Image (tube, rainbow, N blue to C red; front, side, top):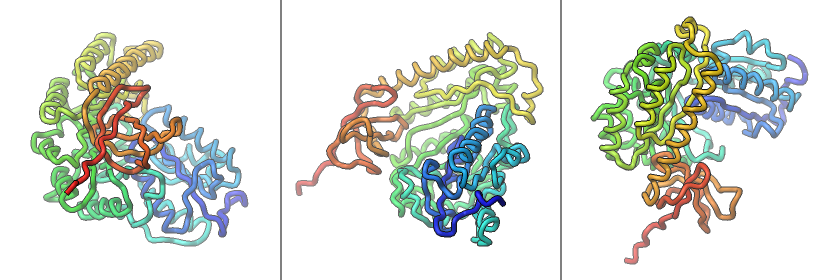
Length: 442
């Protein structure tokens, strides 16, 4: 190993940059904890760390390019840093990443739990014991975050025709319920007010553990911990049953449902190998709002799938226009080698795909603004995450139903929860009025 890549024995620092989904963020949290246990100090990428770790994404070709650029920038900005690459892009293109100049160590998703061990073995001959399912104790609340990501399962058996995730995350496997209860208790003890359950396919949790499922897990987390807010990051429409939805009677469950749609055309959904129809999706959204009027539903949408012609796109647009959605995350289709869709001839050219993406993004922006306006006057629980540097005594927070809000308050609100009455939107946030807790006069 070149001298410039050696770790100083007197100053062991690490910075982790995370790309992509909440599952990647949960993995990065585990890595951070293990680095802490190994004696490292957590710093920012701008602080010249001894070790720089990129936890990469590969869901699109743009994500691949972003990963390559980040690795090269890390070496260019900090020539003495040990540059380490992990995550989905590494899992899919190991040799390609390994050959990027300046990258010292690579490890895919299936080796991620051994990454700290590998670094210490490579540079210092120290080998802490690693456990892929155990989130050991450590001061994660020192990372300036108020919400903790907890991975409950990984992998996907639902092989959608466009998606590379099953190949980089493997088949579905669940983390034992007891371990997850312990993890959430640890998060509560560290001061986290909210835990976000993450995974590749959350609705499949427990299929490989007899007597366990997502409903059972949520019930246990609510019963056996003092966590203030529990959030489920993503669910498929066919997984939202009346029994599951009934759990949201508990106010500690955040009333936000992220339900991937991917297309509003049944023809395209079938070609994508999605396991629902637009009728099922529409019904689930209406059931959620009927049961939880103060909830919000957000969606993912792919524009430009190979079999999406002009008619299918217009059908998808009309369907999305008619849904009561708080936001739509729009992605232009990206060819992923190794998927079935990569071999299908496209019905549109790049210019048409670009224009349709712009059209759908415009709709998404309008839907988000309309939803924020409809929230005027409503009262929600807010977790205040940080101060607003642009204003004195101002704070930025997140409502239980996943709306970004802002307030002005004389006292420090960071990592505190309050009730707030929502006002008018300003930019992408909603100004709101904090409702002080009632003081018992008796």
